[in-house]
Amino acid sequence: MTFTGFTSSDFATFTIDGLDARMEAIRDRIQPKFRAIGEQLVGDAAVLSGQEMYLHIAKHARRTVNPPQDSWLAIGPNKRGYKSLPHFQVGLFDDHVFIWLAFIYEVANKQNIAQSMLKQIDRIATTVPQDYAISLDHMKKDAVRFGDLDTEELEAKLCRFRDVKAAEWLVGRHIAANDPILANGTAFMSLARETMETLMPLYKIAAEA
Image 1 (cartoon, rainbow, N blue to C red):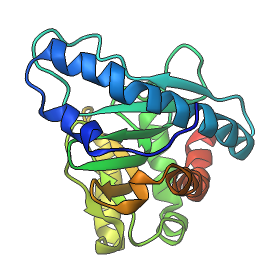
Image 2: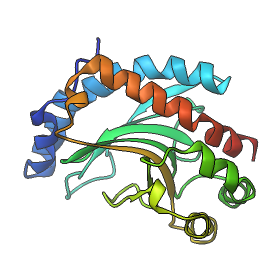
Image 3: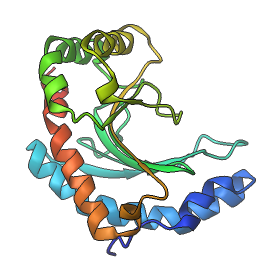
């Protein structure tokens, strides 16, 4: 399957009431698109990282009452799961698509990863484009524009990721739901590949930690 783009109904999925109804829409509307995106990106990720990479699609299996506010695919180096390792995510809320290099709270070796990032903070500051976003919680929409952070603020966020058990570190792009690029499958795939390539040096810093 070729990814042909996101539609308004994809974003409207996250306004559907009820866990069962929303999950049915996620499975029908969104997960086939995630598979199409992921099957194209996983090979690129393997080439860029120099290691085998695997596609995972969020199942939201732990939810019993509240419907998910977003959904995503993940690409990482472990066939059995992605949460304990640095990974790339593509997903959406009701108002935007995100493309992240993600270190979520379950990531193993968290302190060492953060310390390696702190030691190379100048490199990170010059690698990440100004219009990228930073988030400390993958469950929330909140994000800060990377270019709005000075070195001290960036250091503080990395220290929080290192020192606070529940803190996360996600860096990448937010694309508004009404951005025309999302409706163009070819253009979006190019953007996703470009984002992954831009962030691969940070992935490698973490992998080496």
